[in-house]
Image (cartoon, rainbow, N blue to C red; front, side, top):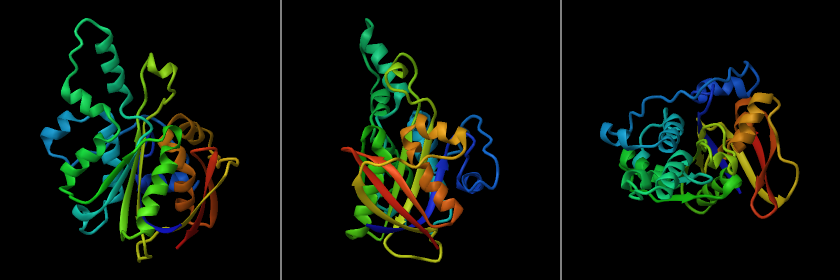
Length: 263
């Protein structure tokens, strides 16, 4: 499958948006690390912002970053949301509540726990009535989301927005689900090249082979510690603007081979 990347968005520790992350991922400047700093979510009404969990804020920040320079059309833009398993902090709180004497779970907490919560808040924020897909594929969620978005592009949609996000799990769930750092990303995929295109991606599903890793140790740690950050090598290839082959782990003992061709 071939698709064109129109824009990218990133929200992660030391990577507050694509404009800053591009130089780091292209090895033009050092990775500063540090804590996650999210921008104000201007797309979402104040009342809804107060109800959102960390996963929703992270996903919307990445999507907002990817569409920062898009002129119109957001309300009619199909989307794909991917997360390895929803908001770990909220899930942990629900489990603690259910293990106690008062087992009444807040409806707001419940709907923030599920992996498709970001899609619902995105529709509120943008007023979109376009189709939206939410999927969860454990550690392979970024790759699965990329396949889904690319499939929609090659089968009829002009553009599709892919947003992936995962947040850390606190103890005791962290002991069995080691998501240690927050990370969100977004890609706007298009069927045709435009003057804004960052590059083309040709995607092939192949047998399992060694996945592409990040040369910078701290960025590699981020890639390993968050399923949504598994796509960092693809973002690095787009940032470097050079022809690169990126291999991502995929479901069913498969790999996703992504040939990146810069514009």
